[in-house]
Amino acid sequence: MRKGYVRLAVPEIQTDSIVDGEGIRSVIWFQGCSHNCPSCHNPETHSFDGGVELSIDKVKKMIDELEYQTGVTFSGGDPMMQVEALEELAKYVKEKGMNVWCYTGYTYEEVLELAKKNNHYIKALENIDYLVDGRFVLDLKSFDVEFRGSSNQRIIDVAKSLKNGKVVKYSKYK
Image 1 (cartoon, one colour):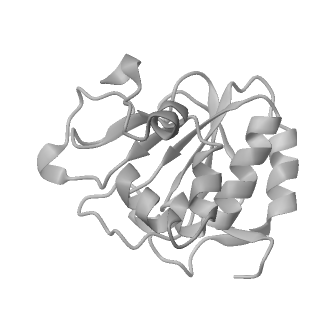
Image 2: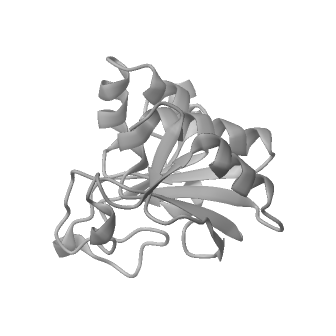
């Protein structure tokens, strides 16, 4: 993929979601995921060749056009697999005064390990308010965990976790 571009599952931003994080938000669906969780609800986003390639500037313009949204959620696929684009877009969303949620199949601890070799992971985390982490596990599927598919997944308060040097779950959704 060319520098300054991102591969998205869809060419538009989904708006007015109430199931991908708190409030009324928009969702940017990243294309590409190597976790391949059995029974994933978005298997069409797994291929790294699928979706559409858009310039990051084009995605920023789409973000500029959002109205009445409290935040943006990055999902997929796995946004961490395009970490440089995630970093830039999450920072842009924060600069616009919106909150950022991000779904990843990696655990928070795995993202920190990746950050030891690539600083973009830390930079991305610094612009994410809440990280929903962990692979979807069919045997742990639950309708009792808000904003998650399986009970092993956590909603992490990223700023508090980075500050405290350990995982701090978002107190509203333990």
